[in-house]
Length: 418
Image (cartoon, rainbow, N blue to C red; front, side, top):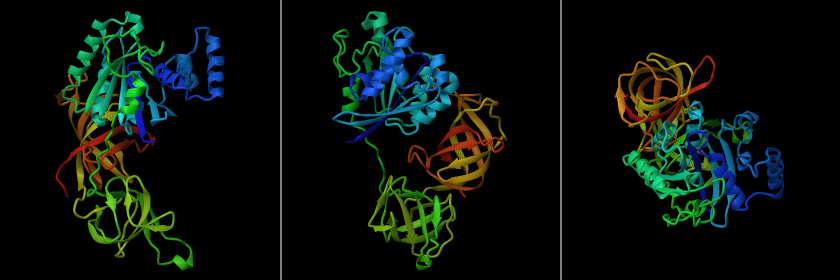
């Protein structure tokens, strides 16, 4: 069955964890011992089933009543399999939402019907757009708290559609729901006669998710050079990694970047056996026709459609550290399998989270702020823009002193190619 990866996001207390719990409980995908444990834990609170306990696993989360980490849950129906990432709503954990969204095909963005669209709703919508998640479900939750008002639902729906009209989403679908009571989650609810669409689960089962990939834009970031110690294999040399896009076949002309060495593929091995082709997301070892110097961090790519190579990149950056980012900050750039020292040479703009417009010339980026920056690296990088390829177009910035990740970046263009 086809796999759908999706996230739940939105502002704090919008009911994300409860919605996931309702999906799991009402779709009857929980094991008996899970249901028994849920009933025992909920009984201590005395307010019925606390479905959020199915995802809020950390003690700190249970004590504070908020999701801090990204909770992943797997479930399946007869029609599809799912991996859900329940991402935090609190503003200080926006960085965790970026982590959960990075591999998602669809976002379920919750809005509390009593509160409407809030700043964090806008921020999550922008990040979903920035991360090129194609499909968004606007779940207007807690409709039971506003007596299932059509006017409230329509106002929130129209405001959100206006907000995301230029976002690049393939589609935005709004559903009035009550995660607490189960309306329009797994089964359709008569309480919202103005809504004639499917309940959430059926929508998730039926949505067609296309994962476009250009077969000619082949990429394999090298993770490991294989040189077996077995004397019988002393002449064996291969370059192992995961194919992130495209297709490789023996005989294909390829280029190794950033060193710009051109050669052809002599063979492709998987689990020690030769294969006729390799495509994303297969992990393989590629043998090259010529004896060339290739190491971790380099990219084997199609000679006809190679990635860009430059020491200067322009990127959208989500800053994740308490200490603000200022120009001339030195950090480690980790992109695909490469790890290169770099310096942020300029902060060109800051995203206004209310209008999604770029505000020019900020002096710094504070925690959870999103901006456009220029970065110069100590050595050339081989990359695509994030719009072209997710893996080779994304990177993280790491503080070399603490080894902590301080930013997530999406490459938008290159400056001064080398």
